[in-house]
Image (cartoon, rainbow, N blue to C red; front, side, top):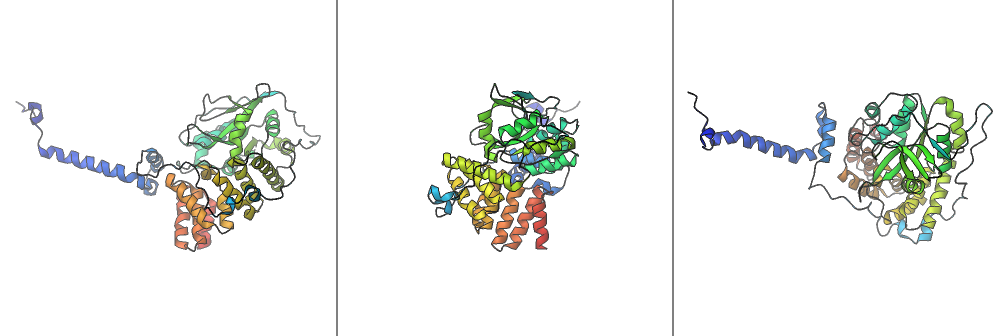
Length: 422
């Protein structure tokens, strides 16, 4: 006869049975406690990057609380001067906000924008976690019969699955790698976008999405149509339901779009290059484009002096024009007006201006806050390295550049910075 185990007779198991369970429980506790502080990707094992992404989603009570806004500048900074002194004194004359397209050569014609347009034949994709850029750009390329999905584009755009930011220039590079064309432009306006859509060119737009309070983030939407009578854009969205033909009133969309200086990316084949060039007008001249962007931002900052985005866009435009000394007080002013706390995950004009004008300490403060919340921000690691180098801390700068490359092995500025250090 088989004797039943002790616990089957109602007796307690022996202590020897508890020992392996206790050891396993202790090991699990240690693992849970240490993983959030460990860069799992450094283990170089299959699935490490995906595991790191999951770990970053875990509740971490020891992690610093989310800030409410981007940190304000020091109290003695130039941006704390009176309002009239913060913006450049002489703004350039305002160019027409919506210039007419250039006259097209006889070989082609720009189709005028009708009252409504809706592009068809696009394959929708719901984004996987943190994959808005790869999903949206491949929705755009699907319009031209391309079969790539976000899986293929992510391998090019974000080899680190936890990368928080895919910039417009990266999306442009991906589209061009497929043999299509794309352009990164700012200071977009309704007429240009409508003309592009009317001529069969879908447009990616970068805008600010706020799914819930104090949780705003950068997002891309593929604009595929509009309806003047209804006063709204339609587009394909990888995150916002219903995904296909998402309708957004013109003014509502512009409120989020202007946070990114109205960035837009037309995606088109080579045979439409002349049409697109005619629609864009002077946009291919980056100086003219940035001067127009600056004029728009200055007007908005003057009309709404307590709104941070006009100031921020003016600073970004000044940096692009090489006017960093003028940009510094403008960015300072924007920081006093409560910029969203994730703002500097995606836009880096303040870092460039402060570094150029001897304010490396601000860059260290701002990048430290970014990296406390998300360690996979290669741009923050890179600019932190630049700030450390400005302080003469070469070894620490080298470590920061290395961290940038771990976050994104394709990030060339960090690679070049490491090379320059020898």
